[in-house]
Image 1 (cartoon, helix red, strand yellow):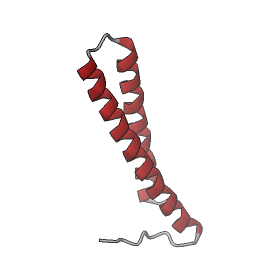
Image 2 (cartoon, helix red, strand yellow):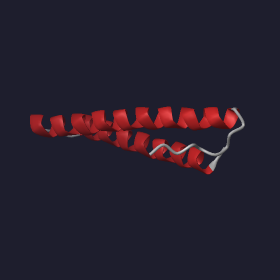
Image 3 (tube, one colour):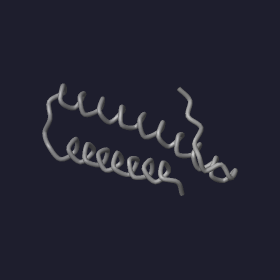
Length: 75
C-alpha cells in the first residue's frame, strides 16, 4: 500500500472514532435541542468527509491494482 493509502486509511479510522465519540456524547448526556442539533451537524459533516475519503482511498487502491503506484495529481 502506498504512503497516501496508509495515510487515508489512518485518517478515516480517526474520523470514525470521532463519529463514535459524537454518538456516545449524544446518547449519554442530557442535551438541549440546540446542542443536539450541533452534534447532528458535526456527525453529518463527518459522514460526508468519511465518504469522500473512502472514495479517494478506493481510487488510490484502484491505481495500485493497475500497477500505477503514483497518484496522478489534479489541481
